[in-house]
Length: 374
Image 1 (cartoon, helix red, strand yellow):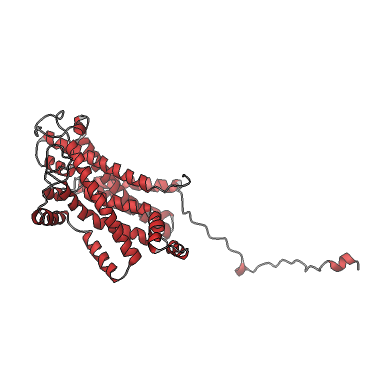
Image 2 (cartoon, helix red, strand yellow):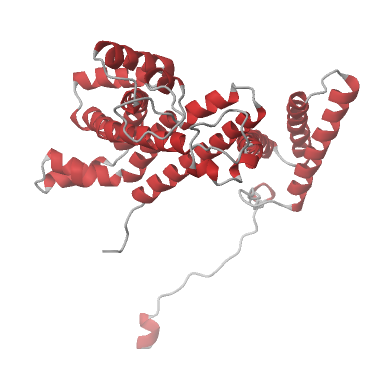
């Protein structure tokens, strides 16, 4: 035996055993597709939609006296769900049927919400298009202009400035108070924080008329503050404060606790941890809280009607005299009954939508994180 043969281990002979019939290898289970769509799926979807529309038309307009758009849409959606369930069950297994039905329900709900939103915005802009084409709608006020005057006279500049002034004062008041309340409930805690959280949650459902009556009774009747933009801003602040505090509380509670612990372990105080770690981390969520608060306050009419009143001219001093706003102008114009004045009201509603959109974009721009730039 050579040295090479002595170092080479003896390998066992390779054998092959035929498996028995009951131990024969089975084919691996077929994986179910979790993404993408096949031609068969698209055909089922399109066919279900067409069947739902056709059967709904027969039921609503031929068999039963349901000839209105709402009944047609609801019947078509119900028939669509039934057809897509049966068609999917004929070609797929149980989990796929459940998945397809859930996706149809969710997609249908999203489509209904999108249609309602788009139709509302489109209807508002279409009704106010005749007045929006005139530049005086943005540059003039309604001083000396009557409800029957042509659209080339007057505008809503006084209402635009009034809304901006009132909502700016309300934001200056509510943002520190709302975020401070959220920081107290989240970072300080204790028995009193639970009471504050309960009060904040209860105030989120506060009717706007109650907030207006509260400010009217406290500031105007008791303290003698005149009906002005400041009083209207105070009423808007009462409505915006619980929204901002509740949303900010939810945002601050999802900040990882490890960030707080790391900051405290490095020797920072609780105040510096909140100011330099917690609040910057939740900046995008705090901007969302501000957006929700502004959306609640900018479109309210009754608090402004009770605390400020309407003026037909530009008022820049929020402490003296009545100050108009876009919601109040829309309310007055729509209920007037005059076609041209109603058209001005729809134009003011379109401007209010654009103003809210601009405020949302501004808040998002401010909350955008700065990465890689100094």
